[in-house]
Image (tube, rainbow, N blue to C red; front, side, top):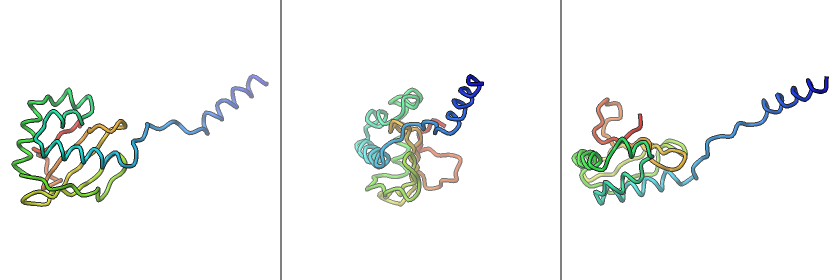
Amino acid sequence: MIKGLGATAVSLLAAVLPVPALSEVGPHALLNVSEELLRAYRAEDAQAFRELLSPPLQVKYPVERLHQILAQCRALTHEIDRFSIPSWGGRRYGFFGVYAELAVLEMILEIDESGRIIHWVITDDVTSGHQPCAVSIF
């Protein structure tokens, strides 16, 4: 009976104790990444941009490919003055305004638990299936 009670107690404790969550990034991580992203973008520095990406994205996007993507982005944005703070989102993702030379655009930025980019897009139409200014694990 005591052995059965011990197993029951362990099962009960396991059921009520919280499951450890993924490590959360700090409250300012997304803003910090967006600022670093803007610096790399303005400098047209594909290598610095690549260093902001998660390891799987670094494999998927070599520097040469990032040069092409950044060139396509510049055709859309020209110079970017600034990003807004996120208008909606959470600690790991946000929707930003992009204040560019010729237009106000939208940016979606998502980071992983270590603060590295897993999804990024700048667009004038978030509903479009074709996004030439994007880097994503999806």
